[in-house]
Amino acid sequence: MNPLYQYILKLADDTLIFGQRLGEVCGKGPYLEEDIALTNIALDYLGQSSNLYKYAVQIQGEGKTEDNLAFLRLEKEYVNCQLSELPNGDYANTILKVYFFAVYQKLLYGALSKSSDEQLSAIAEKSLKEVKYHYTHASTWIKMFAGGTEESKIRLKNAVENLWEYTAGMFAITNGEEDLAKLGIVPDAKDLHENWKQKVAEDFIQFGIQIPDSEFMQKGSRTGYHTEYFGFILCELQYMQRTYPNCVW
Amino acid sequence: MWEVFIQTKPGLSHKHAGTVQAPTAEMALQNARDVYTRRMEGTSIWVVPSKYLVTSEGVDKEAFFDPADDKLYRHPTFYEIPNDVKNM
Image (cartoon, rainbow over all chains, first blue to last red; front, top):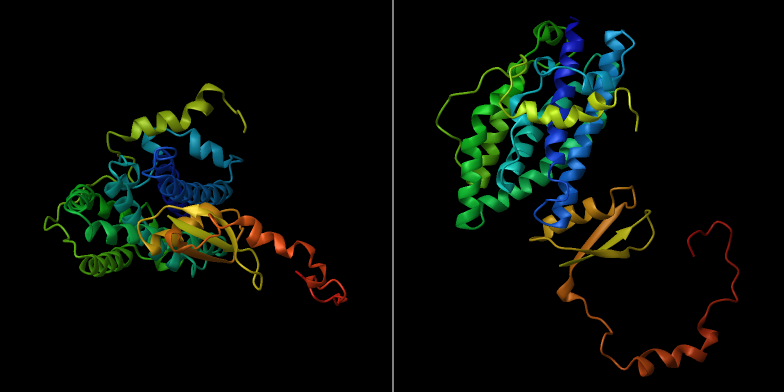
C-alpha cells in the first residue's frame, strides 16, 4: 500500500478514535463550561480526521469517500495508537490523555506544516492552531491537579501510572514511514519521540510530578492490534452506517 | 463565578455576554473562550470576578434613573456623522 496513504491513515484514525472517545463526555462533563471545552476538543479531532481521510481517499484513488474509511473498516484495519482508544476514566485521566496527545500533536503538526507535501502541510498548519489550545487547556488543568488537594494529586498520579506505558505507541511507525521521513515529507518518528519526552519532562518538573521509573511500554499500536476497549468504540461509531448502509446526515 | 465581556470586532467596546464558573482566572478565560466565542463571536475577552461587580440593584430606581427622563438636550442628535465613521 502507498506509504503516504498509510501514514495519513494513522493520523486520521488517531483523531477519529480520540474524538469519538472524548465525545462520550458530552453532557457528562464535571461542570457545564468544561463539558463544552472538552466537546470542542473532540470536535476539533473529528474535523482533523475528516480533512485527513479526504486526503487519504484522494491518494488511494479508488473513488471511496471519507465515510468509507471512517465507518466501514474492520477492527484490524484501524491504525490508531492505543492511547487514543483508552477509556476516559476520571477527569485527571481524561485530561492527562489529552495533554499527552496534545504535546505529540503540537510537535507533529509543527513539523508537518513544513512538509514538502503541500496538502499535508496545509492540513497541519490549520490543525496546529487547534492543538496549541488543547495543550494550553490540558496543561492548565494538570498544573491545578498537581498543586491541588491530596485527592487531586492522587488521581493525577494514578493517571500518570495508568497512561505512561501507552505513550510510546503514539510514535510507532507505519510501513514505509522511514522512507517518507528521508524525503522530508513527514518528520522522523524517533526525533518526535525524543522531543516529546523532553517537553513532557520539562513540564512535569514544572508541575511537580514524577515520570514513572518503569520503561515498559505497550506494543502493537499502529499494527491493527488494539486494547480490549476498541471493539466497543467501533460498535458505537459504526452502528448507523452498518444498520442503514449509505445513510447520509 | 466570572462575568464575561466579549469584543466582537477590534475597536468596539466589550459587551457583557454572560457568566462562567471556573476555579481560577486563567481557567475562566479559557472557559469563556470555549462557551462564548466558539462561533467566531469574539476578538477579545475580559473576565471579571462576579463578586467585584458593583450594581445598582437595591438603590431607589426612581431617584436614580427618572431625572434623566426629560433631558432631551443631552442627546447629541444635532451633529451630522461623517459617512466614514462607523459604529456610532
